[in-house]
Image (cartoon, rainbow, N blue to C red):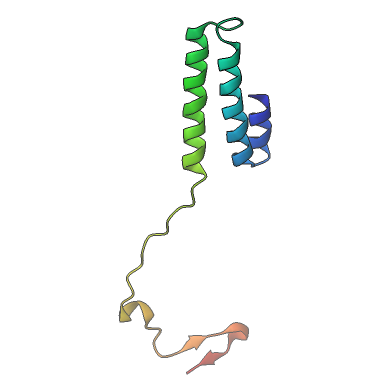
Length: 88
């Protein structure tokens, strides 16, 4: 969990997800000898929820479509360019 937090602090979402998944597997290895099965299951579920949220947040946003109509393209016949000049 600490490794995942460190990765998130450094904006490394993919590495954070891998750390969380590794933690989930580690919990499975500890159960039931060191961690009760119920506690391990709860923590694994919580870890999976965090992974799911991180995966959703790391997907790029899809820009909304802007209709391309002539009214969107009209500039009154002049086009300003760098330096304040205007092209006809």
